[in-house]
Image 1 (spheres, one colour):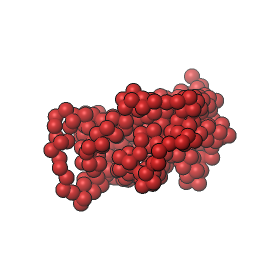
Image 2 (cartoon, helix red, strand yellow):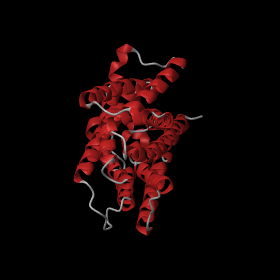
Image 3 (tube, one colour):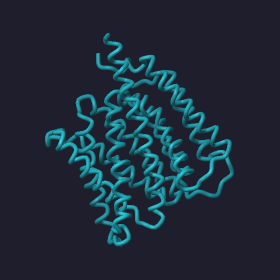
Image 4 (cartoon, one colour):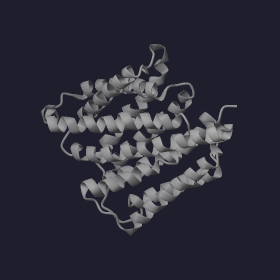
Length: 305
């Protein structure tokens, strides 16, 4: 097999984890919104991250892929995600519909593309530069940005936008460190950093009424959602960044909004109109354009010489 064929297979190997990761974020986020209707944010997030950290650490121990103490830098992106970003996402999610949250999260694609150029030297190709705004327009249509809707909380929008900025910094930092890191070890280290941040924040802002969250069925649902959205999704994102430039990966982030909107339809009874369906079609089109870029080996410009 030629070198180009091997590299092409490597690029495509990063594509599937990224798409699955988008689904892992979308479904549990919609389910978590239902929990946040009656539960405080920080305790829910803390339970999620504890469950995810334990699960990842056990897997890493069994596979002998735990991070070394000397690799403590690998955990720094965890302060941004799952730490600060999800804290702000969940606070905002209490105040805005799931579809609006999905709309705002899609802005991460543009932020990552802008930061990846000066910080990582990843100048996006014209196809990726086209795919990202197409996907963002699609997400805007999905979120009803151009339709008359009820007033949405400015505070909720602000919290989510700030969370998006932290998530973008996590993507940039993870891509920077990923060249010499094991994706699983990095995910575990990031979780421990994020867990400390959320635990301290919960202790500082308490006390909270934990009784409703400790009902076995509720606790299980929260823990499973945490393992999927934080553990599995972040591991898959890191695995994708091991193969793909940050700007290419970010151009597929609008899929999260599409899958979140579909989750709102299936789980929360929300409905999509024709404009939103058209937006979903644009998101799919932008994703196919990114896949085409990867198949054409446009990622080779960012490979180590």
